[in-house]
Image (cartoon, rainbow, N blue to C red; front, side, top):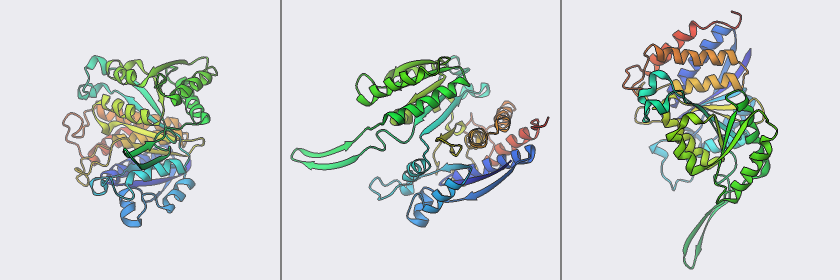
Length: 360
């Protein structure tokens, strides 16, 4: 198979972890007989520095023409002024919107070897395997915003807006994904307060009727936040709106004990997707070779699965990560390990080399 992949290293440790994931993709290409070509572009803080725009037109154009996009991280203290005219994070919002990516997938899986790294008791984290599905292009983050000076003082407004079709498509995707898992969907809302959530619950119920083999449950966001800590193993696919998903997916990410372990995929109607680890740019360790590359490597596995349709190759990468961990490979965020970014990457590559090929 031939495929074109746009690389967006971004800021901080982004270039280091993207380089690691590229090495693993190259390993997949060699092992399974594929040909991947790469095109590197700017996004985030470095793009602001070099072009004045967190998402240059050339980056978006290249991403639209590619089969998939792999992103490192954006942001850092250098660009943290809240009053700045433009911020690195705007590049992320813009590329998601520009590529029509309306759903963010964040799988959270516990590894037996890392159970002790979780802040939760082992009996609560063992066997956790859930998928958070967050709607990406609607809701509070994309609604109208304004300030106005009134007689009583400064008034600010953020608008939470959703169209029915925006809700319907992400719920349908959640149900479709659940069919390949444990066939359970938890739809999270705040229907006891918000009109937008009442519409969300109504449409979730309607869509679920087309998936008779999938069990749908509704949960209020505040009780869901508690349940993620007290009974995370009770979730399979968790789907919710933009802001709730932003918060809950970060909470779920902590379950494994390290943000460096977790991948994500942002998908739309077609095959094109944007893949990135959920961790930030970690400027304090940038350039030191200390970053955990596994979140980005596992994001590359999602890229293989969702954009390139290479399920066997995706499973081989995931098995290589699990195999490396089982043999004791650890970066320092994983219970005080000593491997560098490159060392962990090499441990995964060693496991990948032993994977059976497509023709085996």
